[in-house]
Every structure is written in C-alpha cells, then in structure tokens.
Image (cartoon, rainbow, N blue to C red):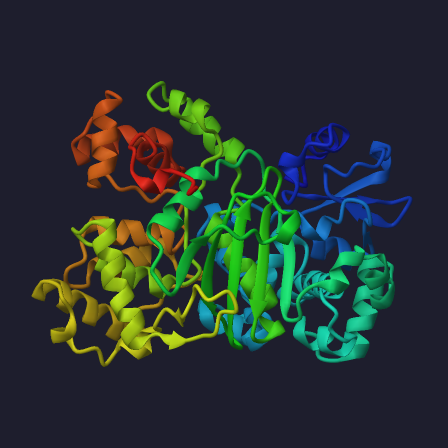
Length: 500
C-alpha cells in the first residue's frame, strides 16, 4: 500500500487508525516517522514519504515519533492472510528466530537461501531480516526500559542485543533518546511494578468483539494450564472484568500471562522466568488473540452475504481464537474428536497431570506447562481412557511431532501441512481444518462438517450439507475462518459468552 501515495496521504490527513501497521509516514523536514493516526498536525504532502515497515524507516535514517510511538502499532495484517515466503519469514522473525538462530537458521527453516530471503524482503518491505529483527529488538528494549526496573545491561541482553554499546547506540538512533532518558520519561508507576512482572497494553485494530474470543479460551481451558480469573492484569486500577491466564512454554524458559479485554487495547501481564523471552511471549499472545487482523476488511466481505450481514452488524470485529503452541493444540484437537468440550478438557487435564512440567504460580491457579511432544512420545496407549482408534491417532501424532517428521509452526505452509495431517491415521477434514484455523492461522480454513456450523447454516437458510455449504462459502473467501466464528455465535454454547 505504501506505493499508493494519494491513498496514504488521505489516510494520514484523516488520522485513520485502521491503517496503522499497513504503512509508515516518514517526514522529511523533521526526520521522524509516524503511524498514520499520529495525533500531531499532519505535514504537507510534499514533505511525506511512505515506507512499508518501521525497519525501512530506520534504515532510511528516520527516528520514531515520541507522540504516536509507531513501533508499538499493530502488525501488518498481511502476514496473517498470506502463506508465501515473505509472510512466513515475517512470522518467524516475530517469533524471535533471527535472534536465536541467525539469518542462516531462518533460511534453513524455510528451505531457501539467505540471498533469496533477503531479496524478497527488500523488494516488499524495504529492509532485510537483520534490520527487521533489529527494529523488533529496539521495541522490546523500550518495553523493558519503561516497564521494568532491570539494570540497563540486563535489558540489553534480554532484548537480544549482543553488547551494551550496540543497545545504547540503537536506542539513541531509533528513539532519539538514551535508555536512561526513556526510563525517566516512563510513567512513575512502572518502577513500582512487581519484580519479574511486565505489564503492557497490546494494541489492536477496532472493532474487536471479545465475547467469543475469550469465551472460547475460557470454556475450553485445561485445568492447571489455563484458567479464567477475576483478577485484573492492570491491578487495582483495572476494570473488574476478569482475565484469561495460562502458562507459556518459551525458548529460554517459561512464563505465565494474564490477558483481559479493554475498549481500546488488551491488558497484558507477563511473568517470565527469563526476560529474553519477552518478544516471543508478546508475539504469541498477539497471535493467540488474533490482534493483527483487519476486522474492517473481514466484516466488509462477510457482510456482503445477506445471510451473514445481520450477524456481522450485531457484533462486528469477531476474531479467531488461536493458540500459543501449535503442537499443543494439535494434541488437544485429537482429544476433542467426537466428544464434548468438558470431556476434552478432562482428557487434556489427565495428560497434563501425568506428563506436564510443573511450574510455580504465585497466584496459585496454574500448576503445569502443557507436555511437549517429546514428553508424550513414550505415552502408554493403554493409559488413555478413549477408544483404541483414537489412541492410535494420538500416539502417531505425538511421535511424528517429536521426531520432527511433522512440523507445526509459524512457518508452516498451510496447504502442505493440511495434506500431511490428512495422511495421518484418524485425521479427517474436521481435525485437519480446525488445526489449520486455530493453530496454523489460516484465515480461510473452513469447517463444513462441523455440527455447530451446519446447524447455524440451516437456521439462517444456508445450505446445511457440507458440499453445498462449501460451494456457498466460496463467496466468503479468504475469510471463511471468521465466518465460522459468526456461525458458531448463533448458538448459546459457553464458548460464545464472555465469562462473568
């Protein structure tokens, strides 16, 4: 979009927040870059140039605006819609792969040469993987500086910098302030935060309807791993709406996160065993809640169908509840085959108790990390209280995941992974598609055989047979996963209700 100058100028002049993350405005006369919704007086059009990423702005010598903080804007929705090389690369960079494994490790995961990846990123984003990872490190450093009392040296290494000097130079270059000045400008209550706990706001594009999003996570929560609590992530001053809490398995350790909906953001409280996991934890929480989606584009397409229009108008901005761990969700999807939500939770809780990694939760509600595939690889099928065929399905899945024969992650190719899942014994279209929708993040995954979808379709006058419904749903592409959320919402199931 950044090449459409006229459209970008109109978005900046109208301060349209819907375009935050789609492009960035660099101001030639001031040397700063802003998000389109920056509250400052818009510059003259001849003084504006547009870039597709914050990293491209920084490479061009611009520093971040201190008013609109463009480094904290929602990510581009492009990376959620697409499954090509650039989109998969961006998802891996957000997951911290470049910081942990370098560009060569990134290339190895994707199966391309480093030159091919750099060429495509430069062509589309104006920056290579190192510059994009550097921009992400700068944002992480700012969060740690402003929301924790960590010594600056600890902040530098936690954010992924190789030295304190590089950290200082980058912060000064990107924000035109030293790390100490950033901390001085931060709200005073940040210094009083609980040690090891980081409180922040996760932005999103409005509208966001939280009922089915948090309702789904709460209704399917696995005891010991997830819970809905009345405690607010923002402490005493937060709104009394409660929060979804869960444990996180992270590259350097583990964490516990609390997430709660607010009118203009998601309140987030993170407790991490290793601060180096902050970037990954934030990325996975945003992915869990589908916060980088473009609800205006989604709802516009679905509203064009007269049968869906009343559902969209009633509660616009529904998101797809996703996951923080793709392998975990795949296991839970198999446990949930042809059983109730309560039964699936019971099966998962037994696995957690027997094979999960214990953690300490100061609030007492969470006890374990969900077991990783390698912890389940030696699972005794006879210990599972489920039909023999489903036991075989589960043990085959965890063995393939543990051996690395099946990879589920941010870099997954959606069609190829779906085909690989369907090749497993006991995997039908429903299981493969629900994993594609909620674990892999495919916005066009569809569940025509799902009982709730078929029941809702029949009530709305839509075809209720899978083949006929699939044909009708072609008009909803590429947002059929969101159409599923609107169809599910016609039922009174607890997944559609924000917990009290």
